[in-house]
Image (spheres, rainbow, N blue to C red):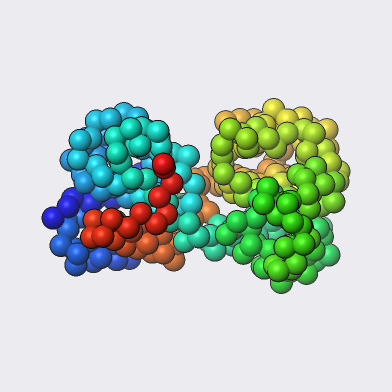
Length: 309
Ligand code: 3PG
């Protein structure tokens, strides 16, 4: 019997926890729940007694990993695994996994909601703009980008996409009804609106900078449901100061949130707490996938979706 910990500062919907419990207990393991914890130490202590751990954006850092002599597997119920110290996992022989695609629809729907909010000036009653006929650029084109493309096409938008792999063969965009471009610069040159879907890594951090954003039109829009680190925050303030019609919505509050709110009113929108993947459907999809991956790992050593070497 293995001890499987769900450690979520931002808890899953109850239906997701019930579903995870069912899978874990049916496989003969024990489920332990640590929700809404207030100190990092609580996570460190709980992880020290667990064989497996399911997390969301919770920080599985070196301290958590080095303090546990029991952990064999950590599954990030979601896409981005920048919150896991992969090197520390590898050094301790711990397998790290994610659950790609499981919460993508929820994030894609939020992108469109944020876009409508900004296009309609925060629903303040003034004349806004429509999305129909506008050019939407998807910066990175994975699970979420592909769903955003499909929904945006329903709005009558013309959809462009850039990703490192698509740039090698832009013709592949046609499979998804999008126009593939070769460089980020080309995407921002051609589009009215850009939605960000890249992971946070050494290549992408701070990459959404003045040079790129200034290629959008005067009334350009940037939507960020990826990670706050990908945006150069100073450059964002600069461009919004220079262009009174430029708009920005983000699901992850930037470090300068209060300044942005004060200066830019309803040209700026930030979620109170990152909520792109916070739907019961996404919680159930990602939570159950994580539970099944853990059961498969202990049963047969299945390492599909492993993200560390
Ligand atoms: C992800 O990487 O899957 C999303 O950013 C969702 O993160 P969350 O589980 O913390 O809501």
